[in-house]
Length: 229
Ligand code: 6GU
Image (cartoon, rainbow, N blue to C red; front, side, top):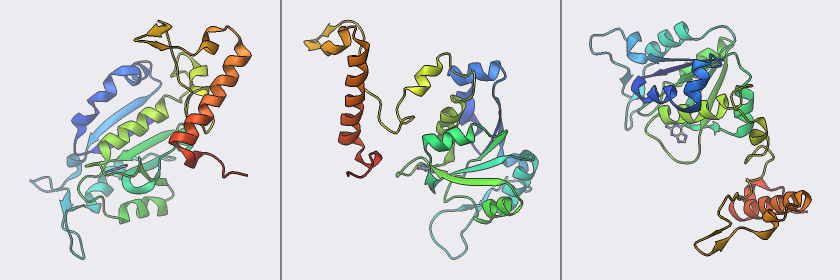
């Protein structure tokens, strides 16, 4: 998979060199490239933003600069992703869909966002375009959100993870939160591991874990459960 990131803070993405994602890049499973938006500015100051039409606080990123950048970076069949607190919620299902795309281009906005004609133009030009939010809180810009999405997406690529079963069993892949996990010692600071996990009875372990998933989900994320019959 090819991933391009366009940002005014390319140094944020040094994180792409480390961890499992760094290894995936070394193994050429992921070809990730980071671009500096200012490379596409046309004035000596490298201006990327301007005051909003209609007035109001903050600055808006200029469509002409973004247009030159994205014209250069988007290849045929690319999916353009714009991280934004005003986007649709990013989910595990969306991560799985994006993991099947040949090229993802993340356009990281700062300030009050990118001129709204930019996503409109690339959608009109036939690209898939998604404005996506991580959740109901505000970050200073799209960079941290883009990295979170890149991590969620790339770990689903075939061959990325050593243990495919750990993806199947984890939180959200079955619509429920994950069950609690324990390791040695069986007794720690007066707290005991649940007996059933020491029983060696695989059927009972599976049943207990499913009950724990339901209980946790009821408690922490009732919105994930189907409405009660
Ligand atoms: Cl994707 N961007 C910004 N700036 N803030 C956010 C977000 C994205 N998701 C949640 N908050």
